[in-house]
Length: 213
Image (cartoon, rainbow, N blue to C red):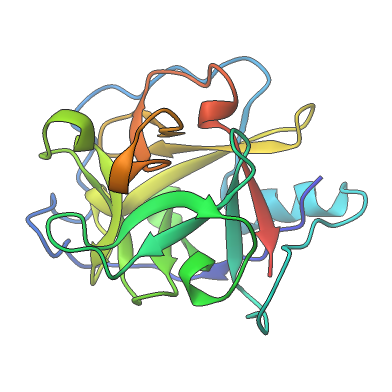
């Protein structure tokens, strides 16, 4: 199993780009959780998973680790998720599973527990911004995950699930109720992009490893 460390904080502000008000409910019904997946309900639940774990997973670090940081690895292509902070608008800060190793802040995230909402927020270490789901984007970029918000409201909130048998995690957007998938078949600058677009966890496209770094 995976050892995960979380930074605990309650966030109470609105998103930078017109997100719903704090505490706003998702606009659509959440997707059904497949059998075998367990919702991670805060630090205590995560601690239980950690205590039952065997050898802790650690990221293949090429830089000094941060004690509360997490690296996110796609189970589909075995690459770490990076924040593309140098991308031009409108994809600045897009999340892509494209790094062979954890090399530093580009692949680092802090997961913050929002107790009153029973959700998590992901804060990128590359640019210090929270990850949002771009539900207003169209085409291949619809529901793209981008680190672009200075605070966390409905657009930036996620539910985490854990599958003990697979020893993997799934990430569900609170905004649209869909699970995050890695777009392995995309080409160009958005190859391996993360999008909240799946109604269920159907395979490795929606499965991730979380590593302490």
